Image (tube, rainbow, N blue to C red):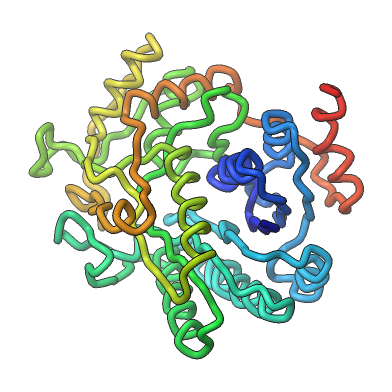
Length: 360
């Protein structure tokens, strides 16, 4: 199948691109590289031994996006492209609405113009807001509490209304929880720009000595050790969920929603302890005040994905930490910085294919 992956050079996107290639799909990527590096795709190509057709294109550039889709003629799209920092979304809400919502609108129009109406959308458990109705099910009422979460909710609603208006669309809204880990090779993984927004990469940077300590926001929650509990899911399990959803849509019409999570939670101290044990490094931490809006626990009810997709998260916290530590150890500074100037299609092809050419 010809599959276009938006944001395919990013953390989840690159792992999904690798699995698509390994499954035999013909993969193209659109990414503006604002929060990612073409080096990730270079490494994906090296691991897979197969090429990725890559375009440095912004979804907000509707004419350029239309030209790319017209040249690719994809049969399906997996849509990861979007800004995702909750704190930044609070400070710059218009930036998030423009990039995430308007960018998705452009993508849908460009898809429709080339008769491609199969979409796997990267949604988020943030659409459940501060719900304490655990475990979180697909039927749990939605109520986002920050601009980032609201952009995901608006896009879900847009896709719902589009599917009602035109039965030719086949859509999967995948609501996933806390992606962590890395590919077992240590070649690709999460490379946050600046200070990490999420716990696991922050802990990894403390373990490697890049940051002095972890701030633990509250230890007086009604949990086993008083710290917040979240449903962490290995990025490889998550990527497999996208392939399962894509396969499901190839045989099923309409719009479908699935949680992708483990169904179990780990506390902040569980994560810190696991990193210290597996890395053999100290991970100092300091208890601070709770953050506004944080809930004590959040974890998925993943049964619908198991029944519909035959998908289940298989990797536990130990493997998540082992794989993330391997990535962090091999790449203490993340991916190397590259020329910030935009690259055209031919330049990207030459760069990304370099590793395969080296191995031939």
